[in-house]
Length: 292
Image (cartoon, rainbow, N blue to C red; front, side, top):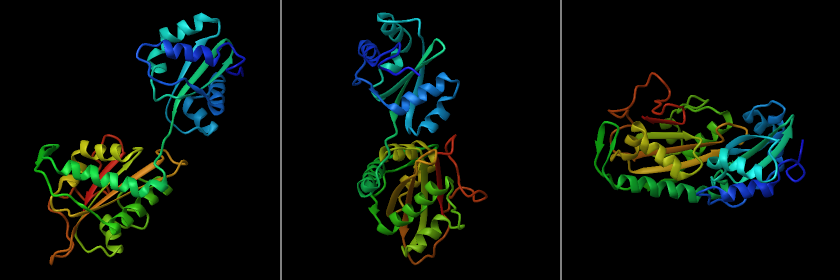
């Protein structure tokens, strides 16, 4: 393997090309040893996904760029600009690695995965509360149904405890369902916290790396949007959990509830079908909504 400082392509040349790309706003790329290993695996015929896993580099996105080693000097900069300015000019791609083999050089540029930290849990929970209440403050369509503005929700410690427990379960097991391994439904988990509810709703998500992404994903999906906008709910709890051994590495739970009235806990009139544990509203299993 040729290093970035000794091989046919230097980081000075890489960053010269990056700086010359129209619209570039990114800082110079930083060489990361683990990405040098990723590039070496690619040069040996490996795949980008496997190489990233083997190197232990957790990326939110990574791109592999092949370059012929017959190109040298200013020709390298010109080649990078001509072929790869779209990738090189992206400010979110901040790390890079490079390796050469058999007349072909591989440049890997990546954005490191930025997950919310456990120490920020309270701040993130309040971000979710603010974003949900901002959404409820305005009338909006949720798919084919139109919802008027709804009253703001209050943050519940009990609901947040239920949400955290389920987010942690999903992160630990890699499952993406409303019913957990113990057969507990959202209503069961809320009941276990001693929150006295007459109506319970739950949204889950996986892969979103911020509260804003998670809430926007729910608003963009009709079933989840209906939960967010349901004027019957009075409280919410929110939580996330991470596990770098899983893909996706972050799981979110939003629990909503209406405080107890004389009526017992019951199934919402417009609840999704119950023949499955989760009603999936997204084309991929990154979101799910349920009401009990």
